[in-house]
Image 1 (cartoon, helix red, strand yellow):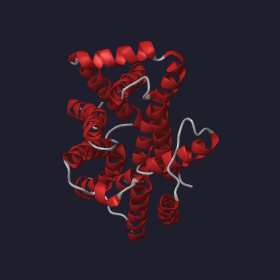
Image 2 (cartoon, one colour; image 1 turned 90 degrees about the horizontal axis):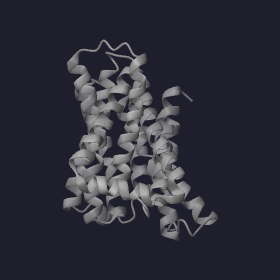
Image 3 (cartoon, rainbow, N blue to C red; image 1 turned 45 degrees about the horizontal axis):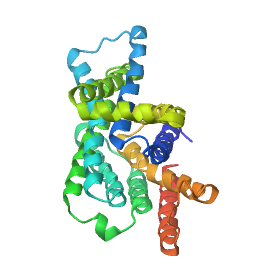
Length: 294
């Protein structure tokens, strides 16, 4: 397995693990406060600044900070979408980032891939979509939640394509520090500007009790996932990296199914015959796509 493929698969695995933690933590923390807290934890990346010799032009520094901020801000249209629509109908729409990235990578990065790679991308995209979808007709229905997810995907896509371009001008550590700084700055501004957000974050931390360690682990896992996806962007094509990043739902399904048998009081994954057949087809498509990549 190439280093690129390792990190491209590690990222969705870690994002999926963070999602599992989210399901356990949402009894004490809102999704909004978790997102803000993750942005604040990204500020730890600023500790690397004294060890850097940054020679990037100011314009590129600003672009890097914007890319990091876009990654943080991409979660908010999603939170609004799940507030007005069922999460099971919203989550599959994250797959819209795949065609968006493919288009942006071709236009702005001049990214061209072999036919087998595009075939693999299509199989992985379809498999990842089927893993996360529960009702195809309801998911594809055009509602206000759909437009919110379109915005969320646009922000996330831009936040991933920009770093791929920036890596042509600076080292991974330089660019990654800028991205984490942008994450942190956006989260800090959100915290300072919104009394509601401050209250949610403070209340969550006060009431966290015995789950504080899980909270810290979740933050470390998500930050690690963000670094992993950027390592994959550094080493390989942006469009394929984003397609593989969509496998987080696949890893969530695998983990949630295992927990359903081991500790059903925590999770109860729907495992009727129709669901299992759909997931089996989806997993087969994903495996075939990975085989083509290899």
